Length: 340
Image (cartoon, rainbow, N blue to C red):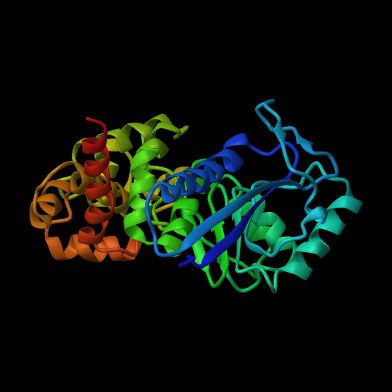
C-alpha cells in the first residue's frame, strides 16, 4: 500500500548582502530534519522541498561575510505552491524598481502562503508590505527601535527571540533563525521529532520565543558612566540582599533622586526593574544548571519565595519556572548524553 505523499515547499528568500547565518541556519535545520525523517519508517511520506531563492535577478547572492550563496534562481521563477516563506534579511541594496516589484509579489502571494516568516531585519520587508500591521513582531535588538518608529502600527517586542502572530513569524536574527526553524519543524512533525533534530545539531529544542535577546549582565559591561557601572557590578555580588535605591545611592555617594535619574539615563530602566531582570536571569541559570527547588533558587537570587519567582517569570518571560526548566534542562541534558 502506497503511503500518502506530503510535500511542503520551504522558500528562503535572500536579499543581497544579508548575513550568511540567517539563511544557512534555518536551511540546515530543515535539511537535517529531512535527513532524519528519511531514515525512519513513518505512516506518511513527508518531504520538505527546500528552496534558496534570490531577491534580485542574479543567482549568486553576495553575503555580508563575503561568502556567496548560489541560489536556484529569482523568486519570480517560483512555479510551485509555497508552504513557508522565510525572508532572511533587509533589501537595502535592491534598487527601487526591484524592491517595489518584490513587495508587490509578496502582497499578492501572502494570502495563499501558509506561514510567512522573517529573520533579523527581514521584518522591515514584511512591515513595508503591510503584513505586520496590528501584529506583534520583533527584529534584531539593534533595529527594533527603528522598526517601532518607522511603523507605529506594529506592536514591536523589543527583546524577543521570535514571535508568532497568526501565520506571521518574526525572529530576532542570526542564530534565532534556527530557533524559529526548529519551532516550525515542531509544528509540522511534533516535539519528539524536533528534539531529535535539536540533539543532532547540538541545539536547545526550544529557546522560548519570549526569552531575551541579550543579557542584562552584558548591559553592565557597556555602561559608560564609571560610577553606575561600579554600582551595577556591586549589585551582581549582592543580589540576595535587599537593594532599595537608597542603599545603591549611598554606595554611589549620590543622593537617591540624582542616582535614580542618572541610572535611568544610562540604562533606560529604573534600578528596581534592572535588579529584577538580573534576578530572573540568575534564577534562569540555576533552573538549568541545578536541581535546587524553586524556593531555594528564589531565596538565592533575592526573589524570596517560589511564588514570587513564578510571578516574575510569568511577567518577564511569559512562562513558569517549571516550564522554563523543562524546556532547557531536559533538552540540554539529553544533548549531553547523546554526545558523551
